[in-house]
Length: 74
Image (cartoon, rainbow, N blue to C red):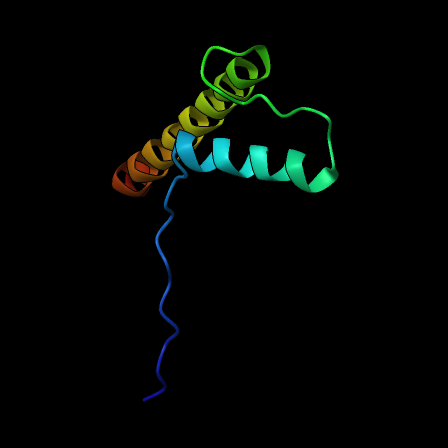
């Protein structure tokens, strides 16, 4: 019998992951933005975007779980 590949479940990113990735991206671009401390303007903007992206990931996970449970009834 052939071995089926394992499927990794959908794991949403956290806001810390998104925030760290956005800061690293800005630094790799050589951007002049450097003050990502809490309370700074750019830090607050990055944090707000990270929260929205993480919320979208969580909503996607919940939607997938709901679709798996109720998909057979439709």
